[in-house]
Image 1 (cartoon, rainbow, N blue to C red):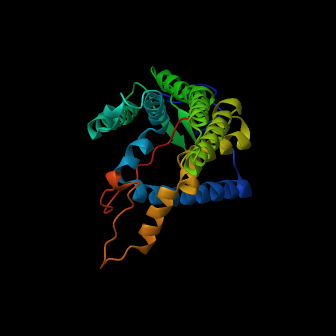
Image 2 (cartoon, rainbow, N blue to C red; image 1 turned 90 degrees about the vertical axis):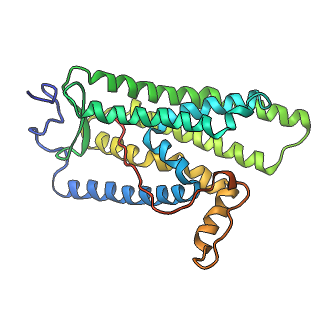
Image 3 (tube, helix red, strand yellow; image 1 turned 30 degrees about the vertical axis):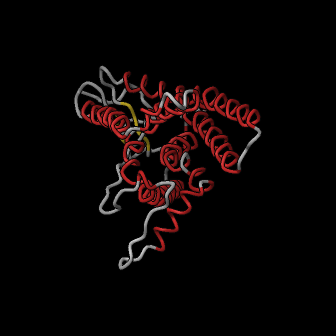
Length: 272
């Protein structure tokens, strides 16, 4: 049975999209971005510990969960203290992990699947009965992130600005957090354009889809790595840490500090 759709431009039997020097250049760009992304992800995981595994499993859905949490905490700060209990986050991460495992299991059956075609350097949906489910989930993630970026976060920023004006106080910390959120929203919108608006035709479209998938998990954490002082302190501790004299983590991240020994970095590729 042919697993690829009839007349698909990305069938392994069709001529490759990149040839000669263009293929070498395209692979060089992808390898460079992959190396930079993996380095930054390893640094981020070393800072936040095991909490970083679940977002890498399924970042779009984790964003939706995180946005709901932020709305509840900001709108109802006193009555939402229960959300800060570790058991709540463990339950949420378990659900995300189950979703990830389910995706892998279904991908190994004859019901639905996605495969990487090295000849064209892109992930292609297989011509199977229930592959459309992956398209629906991908659309839900893409449009869900867009909806959160243009509605939830702006509303939160307006609410926080209003409350800070009412109280007559606006600290540098609030200004940095506002900058982080604004940049993150701009990045999310750029990725939505790359995934949904730009057509997947020809070398340029393929390269944009590949690079956006590779760089997504790094791009959304860059504002926090650059503007969050608590993260800066943890980075300093990582580089100053002595084997003979263990350092104590900064108080800002102490509740989530985990022993930074052997770890693995899961690699997940989203559907263009």
